[in-house]
Image 1 (tube, one colour):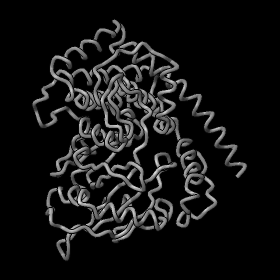
Image 2 (spheres, helix red, strand yellow; image 1 turned 120 degrees about the vertical axis):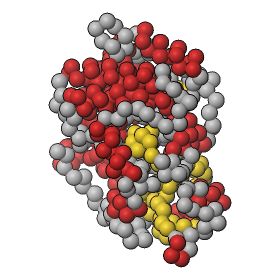
Image 3 (cartoon, helix red, strand yellow; image 1 turned 90 degrees about the vertical axis):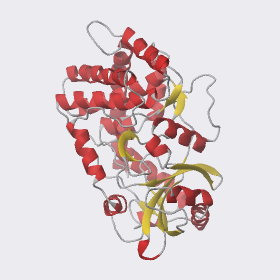
Image 4 (tube, one colour; image 1 turned 30 degrees about the vertical axis):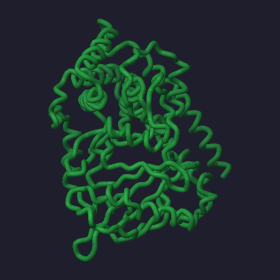
Length: 409
């Protein structure tokens, strides 16, 4: 197990000018924990390696893709009315691109998880077969249905059951480690500069944020918003060099008031390749929100694009029901069933953007490239196998450098 990072400055007093150096240490520690964690934190290198490998990928319909579709970026998401569904939960990298890229990224993540569970190589072959099978099944499904009737494996059903039972105290204890109306400064939350605090206060007081927050079930559009507390939110990978804030807001007045937790995140340029002639918003925050509405409507309809400190940011309220899929040790059957289900989730996210003719054509194209001995397309198999090998080498090199730096520190 990787040693804890050496952080010289006390977390609660880290100044804005010191953030990047401390965050870099935290990121390197996080990515040294396991090969699967390294895969999750390396989106840019994923596309660099994919381009170098240059597999003969099919050119799928140009639709909004996640761009970073690993297992941890899917999970239960609540809509404005409190209904929960498994959808994509992180759209920072979303672009109009080739849906094959999402399939490879998810296949790589599932293969890494299988290897991390010490499952044999044959399981990886089955995982990719089930992934593409579930994806094609979704494309052939009924997109007129508003309710997802996909069969859920036990791991997903347990996660959904936990999600719908969660309340504000669960979110506060998990995210803030406290249920009191404040954001505790320390390891996860840092001080803001006066400029940052004033900018966040102005944004929370805007009409757009008022409309977003009060649009959720059980709130009135006349409920006033009051900024309770705000802090810089420490994220080991995604916060490095960018804006990230946790904002605690009181909605309404008196005994009928409630608390909500807003996540403000800077929208950066996407590493995922864009389709030629794709027409997307030039503003990165608008790109993220538009892609989210197409791929994950439960989440996208709860998001807002804005400007903060002259940078593009997107804002959403974190709901207690929003969770991510956390993989422990998987059995062979669990890995297969989970892969099929997540393939269907991804297939519905892509397929809802296509008409029936396009969906049928894309499903047929995916079926053409399967071999007699392997139901998964060969391009998917070869890309994932090559990327698993490259990630393993890069992961070990990352650990070597991390160990040397820790020793020097």
